[in-house]
Image 1 (tube, rainbow, N blue to C red):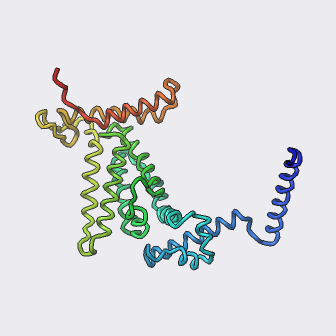
Image 2: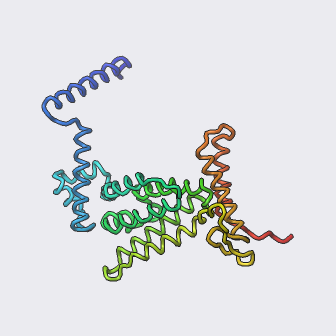
Image 3: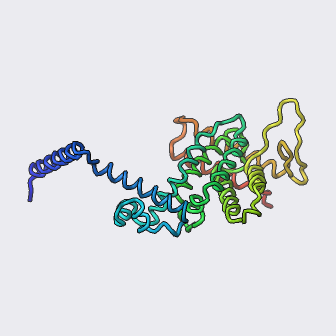
Length: 297
């Protein structure tokens, strides 16, 4: 059994040999293994993406991708695990431009209008890049959310947090993001699947406004203008708010989510991390439960 000193000497020798090998490869113009693997990964993803866009998902066999990338088929499995891992990487590759554009969207004084702009960007991406979009969302599996989709939802939640901070969110941030994301994905897949002559982009506009009305409240009326609301009997919401049970539920949700957004911006030591987590849970419950009639007795 090797002594500790012997093991250390062996490790030093292996490290020295590794450095010398890297220096020799660099001197000979050969990339180090990590650089070579990254280059092969990039070539494989780009090859698979090219096949996906030009010939469809059925053409992206590992053999065809390997041939196009100039690598042996086992390299794909070594770098990506399996074909699903490769397609996940291709999906992320396709969504990169969209996610960068979404993250760079300017912030206006109206966070709900900013959501409107983000929705339109999402629709344009899905309709102009149907191969990538259907790869990410057209083959749903229970309990599996594509990484590209996770990133998109995270950015959407960030934008919806601004709506909460403005006191205009009718429900929890997570529920609002889930509703908006599900609605936009369903709208895009429906439009992609429609015959060109039946594709009506006004469908996306109508769906957008329905969703925004469901998750947010209208902007407050400017000072000095007359507010319009619903009636206590119906609880319907007018342009600037509502009354009755619906209005009360909105008031509770708006206040709860505004407090949650303020809590997220604060590093106050007044609450512990565990207490903060519990408070967020309570605020979400208040925002999502809505107004309930009092129980008899």
